[in-house]
Image: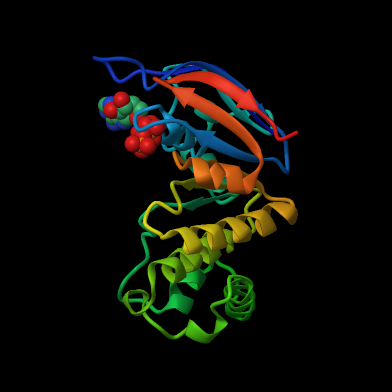
Length: 222
Ligand SMILES: Nc1ncnc2c1ncn2[C@@H]1O[C@H](COP(=O)(O)OP(=O)(O)OP(=O)(O)O)[C@@H](O)[C@H]1O
């Protein structure tokens, strides 16, 4: 489903953010991208989101080279990908429900369907009773669950997450991982960057290890 073929991303001076990385991810896999700060994890996720392009090599998703997408195709592609950030990026002046539903409004989903889907997803992440609250009235874990519901609104085939539990305590981090496992079990491919070894041990899925921009390990759970 996802193929990186000899991908390098350089930013001019200094070492390459990614260097000659080749990697295949199958549909339905759950991959943890591990590695210390600066290893290239976010760079790889940005390439998969098509926010950035490789300096050399190819990034293919379902056989399409993301570098060749025109502007309109890029937007269509991004709708098939959900993204969860460390800092949630919720709109503070919108309610929980509006934060989740807005994505679908932009896409032209009928209002009744928006309502049904947003309610269903908020229920899935255990927040159906907080739909009318504003983000700042919620705990960090609850805010991240809203962000996850929002990322799932388009029914993405790929969910990308960049340190999604970076701002959460242990118990909440594990809750978020349980949600990710459920999402993955329903068929969504998950690629999550984290430097948290405890989390990786908890998830027990494939671990792709980056260091100084290079792929230095790829292990699957026994
Ligand atoms: N826009 C940019 N311009 C220049 N250098 C960049 C840019 N983005 C990333 N880099 C460099 O590329 C390298 C990899 O960065 P990246 O953010 O991908 O690492 P990371 O593994 O996600 O780290 P962290 O865990 O701290 O987020 C770093 O050395 C970083 O300084």
